[in-house]
Image (cartoon, rainbow, N blue to C red; front, side):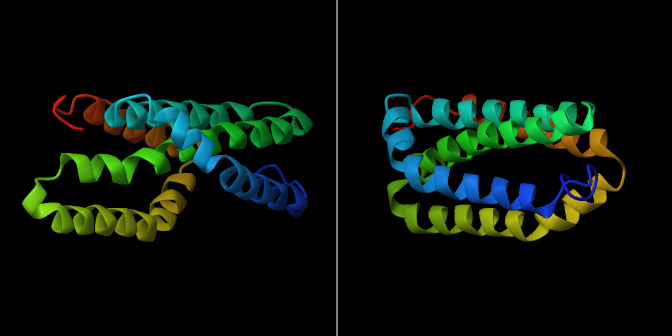
Length: 160
């Protein structure tokens, strides 16, 4: 988006990537520990809301004047990283907690397969949506993420 739509220097995209990496390395453990005070499904639902808000921030940022848009995208990327940190710390734990004890290995394998499959097809899906414009991309991602967050929030309370 920074380079292709806003024609910003590739340095900005690199800065966002480096910032994301540094934030993940520096804050994954503290965020995971802090979020452990919440039930796993609540933490995962919170991550969905945070990520959804970041998607709307990306959509809104393309409407700003050029210089402000670049700065907004960098800022929204930090919010997106926070959602990523919350998600990473709770997703596998939730999958493990909700699996029957005798099927834990199979449940975790299915979870990892679904995650891997999603990561594999994401570039094609995002490219197809982006070709239809920023609204198609960001609103679709927001809707799907919020739907998933609601589904997780409605999981039975019996999860550990």
